Length: 105
Image 1: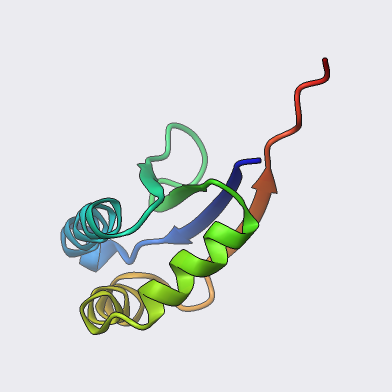
Image 2: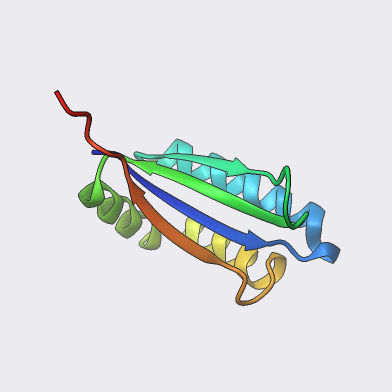
């Protein structure tokens, strides 16, 4: 059963270009090095500088395993550290976890 992690955050206006570039690096790194899929969602309506990451995992156990691998990886920690400290507004990150509904037979 797929698990979806939906994380929204607000990028600082004065760090917008750097924030978008860093987001693209994070997406590329995670998609190339870990067993899950990451997408960057851009706003169509609502707050202009609120962006989201949507990560798709095969299940809760896989999410836990991939998170452990990511947080043991110094290169990944550097990427997200720069992003969190320099490019997003403190306290603006909000994370939700969803699971797909099973199809009934």
